[in-house]
Image (cartoon, rainbow, N blue to C red; front, side, top):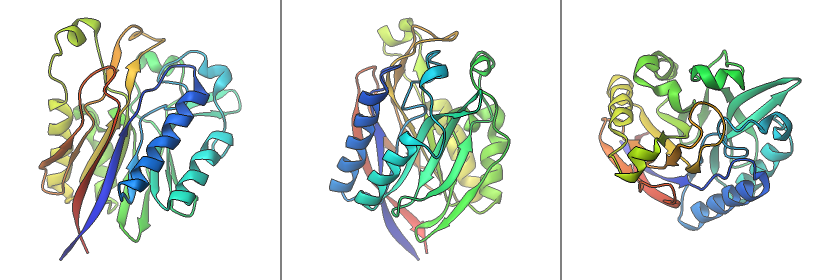
Length: 259
């Protein structure tokens, strides 16, 4: 037997360095997801500071901390599960992190990205663990973007072997200015990777990217272009958001999960 879960992919604009405006957009996505009847909303990677933004060295906050607390309170008020990417400060170190928040506003999982690009490791330290959480909607796993890249699928497989039936992945998918100009199709590599995980473990996979500029690092001048996507437990593409540096949207869909 199966039941339906409604999930929102909050493909929001992230402006590097503009933490307050970015947080307000994230909160708006949570509220819109509630209005659309969602039980889970997935927000992008590093939604506070922007991925690889050098100023995160001064802007990043601890987790738990002021920014995660704001999202947790919104999750509580909306009564939703919220998966969100944040930049985490711990002492002098930064991590590309994500949290899974419960409808009661609790942090169920805090994940630190493991498969970070080499140039991004100049800013972030690498994470060293994976977790799942048992919920009334099923066991959920959490990772970040390239943790599910084809060459690092062992990380996603590990969450599947740990029993996750829904894998949530905040992302920041970027293309070069040349590819953006011709609107080169994007996302097949992620869809193939997600389907591989789904078919092996009977695990739905949802990845939400932001839109907007990349500032800092080797990809400075590139653009995040959304194209957020979801595959079901049979590996079928069931939702794909719009493509573009300004393609901000909340895309909600229904997912059949076993009970």
